[in-house]
Length: 329
Image 1 (spheres, rainbow, N blue to C red):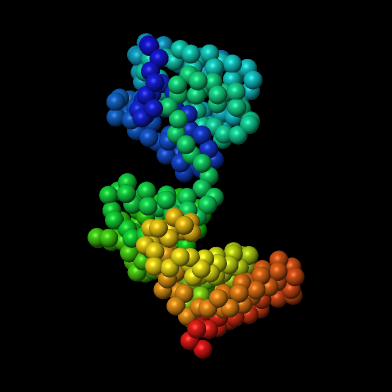
Image 2 (cartoon, rainbow, N blue to C red):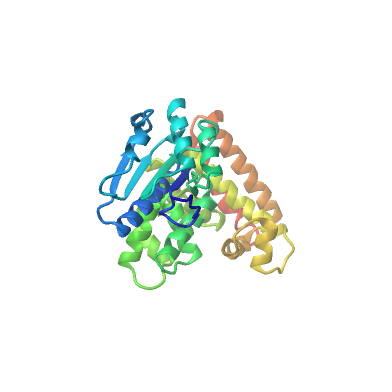
């Protein structure tokens, strides 16, 4: 068979899934298997760990069959293959067999880079599966999940879901599926709050939002709930710092700008500009300075500089809430 380079075709001779995000790696595999079984319901699927692929294994699995059956061969953790097995794989990449799709799951990075480079040079279809360590990446993931199923969700709802669920992509994907199945029309922040109330209240960002809005009692209640459900104190100080800094950045920006323009200038999404504008109404420059000092003291307190991290956080929340009302005082 002539070598086929089809970067969007799940039935390309070789698919290279690169990264360490398990959900995305599994989806890359499922996509190939589903396409193969759509073409041939009797497709033979062989899913192998790297230690199950020895020299000669790939040749055996990809040798011509009397029944010319379609086959999918999946090799997980390909970066851990032995040097002799890598030679076999490289040789196969130059002349892939007909009716067979090879899926290599590779963590990326320096280990096993020679195999990664060889697969790319051979024209393998590549599926990025990076770990989503940044909140912005997880937010984009949630938006993509809603788009994929053709449902509308407000930016605030997507953010609330990320705040409530956290960093686990499987849980985020499951939450989107549940909301889409149970709710008609546009998914908004109120819907997310109803479904994930306990978890949303435990979010460090909820503590920060209530504090910068000057709602001390609600902020303290959210703080105590967060700590009781195992939210790390350092995550709460980080959220408080982000909330106060957002107030300071927007208050010192050139006034009157459109949310899109300010978003580019300040590095915030447009929807967050609107939210911070509402939160900053009671703030003064002196109030921002006082709040930032309170956050710094709390951060030191939760990182070993004090005897009671909970008290350090409570003190910071009260100071921030009071600073949020400084213009009205």
